[in-house]
Image (cartoon, rainbow, N blue to C red):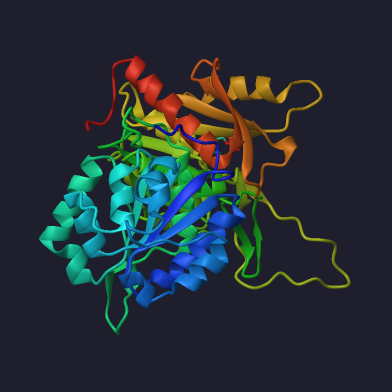
Length: 425
Ligand code: CTP
């Protein structure tokens, strides 16, 4: 069985391509995988070569491209490629490929590799809405998911003709992020991704709020939303249903997440209030403004020669994390995870401030990062995960995707330890 990896860097990825018009988008996924440092073998189906030819895959991947179980027989390619892979992704996965994977067919090299591999398998479906919604496809998807295969939700949008609906391949960046989450996920003995969040509905806030001063200016912060996004991808990979409250994030929606865009702290507070009673877990990764202009000017504030710089009076915003904890009261659902970005001061270390914040906020977990080390917009993060008493449970240092899985591991451990899992699988 292949072990979880720290990232796609150095990972052996088998990229299957099946025969749909979206096959060309797999070239973007391939480029992204190579840019992330993966070693990729492309295994197209014969039908897919009608859409994108062998030469494209060989030129882009710098590796030979095989399709049949009779290719490269002396190296037993039909067994070896699947056995050696750290991750198998099929982009796009047609209705026919999904049916063959469910049936356990081995009639071409891609199907045979799917049958052999013990690495996590991610299928990114693309097909017409009718095909996706057909009971046969839906049953195949359900069975594959039960077996531990990750089948991404297709996007809703324009399909090959003039029709629109569910069945569009998620954007390549969203597929790449889902592959990053899959390869870093904890595993079962079989090699499948551990679905310890199956049955859980997780609400995640991400990004940074903006507080308008006038029609052209606002107060913002440096959060990009990447850590919240990584949490959404990780939770989806582990079987959760995810609602993502996105504050000013320019990132592709994770396949399968319900995304609600918000701008200000007040809008975020309203959306959290709408959802927090119905979910099992709330993860507050967004950077929320603590202060907002007392009044927003309706017209642009102008400078004049005879006037000093204007003063902008501010008022406090709602502490959404604290109000969520308070509203929960004595019950344990939803489980609540807060974040703490600290720089420390001359008198008090960043860690000491975070411990104090953990005790003050009362969340089940507080994920602390020292933001003096340049975490914003970067793919790396270093955190310490504290419990409600401020004691350190664990630390994580690596990609935001690895940190996301470490947060979910700690969450899963805390709720299981107290024998009080808020969701039922
Ligand atoms: N948070 C919140 N509502 C706010 C401000 C912050 O819910 N108005 C949440 C953040 O989403 C995060 C946690 O509180 O999960 C800590 O955020 P942080 O900005 O570090 O702390 P503050 O509460 O702003 O505390 P301080 O100003 O003392 O650092």
